[in-house]
Length: 106
Length: 117
Image 1 (tube, rainbow over the protein chains, first blue to last red):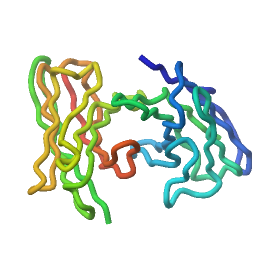
Image 2: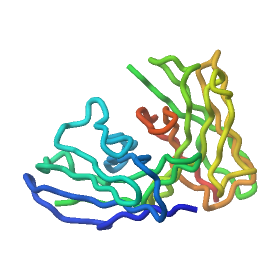
Image 3: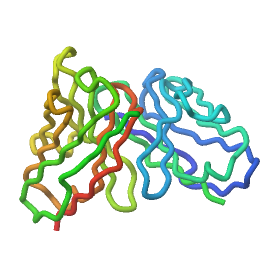
Image 4: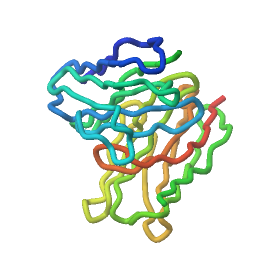
């Protein structure tokens, strides 16, 4: 079974910072990788699908890149509303497992 | 506006059963692939399973931890997807979300809490 890991597990940043989160698959998943943002007590929100496609309505400061086993989510200039937990998700097979999450706090 | 509303959560004893519902509106429900995703308290997200639209075969897929115990079904006339959960275990305690989408989940409900204790 393909395992998903994320690094770091948490990070502290300031408004205006550029933030990069990494997601790694234990085997190649091509570009079948999504990114979600989740705030406490709320449902997740899709940011990026298929590794680099910005979901409609997601702010353009979010971008995704990568293929194969290594992927990144970048936030170009962190805004107050971006403090949240971010999850990657593989969707290359029928088992759409998530990474363990990266918490971004102040 | 797309809306997904889950219901049916609650407290159940280990070994018991529960059926969750998710009612959709604001989109063509019959064409949508529907998923269930759960989140244990203080933990990360776990994909539970999905059901394809009937035009795409209506088949179901499940994550290993729930296969054989959970069943997803749909009633397109009621625009509702169901999650039948049997032989519940304490580790099934979680907020259960329904979400649309075949390969990425673009709309989510607010979630319903299932406590197995």
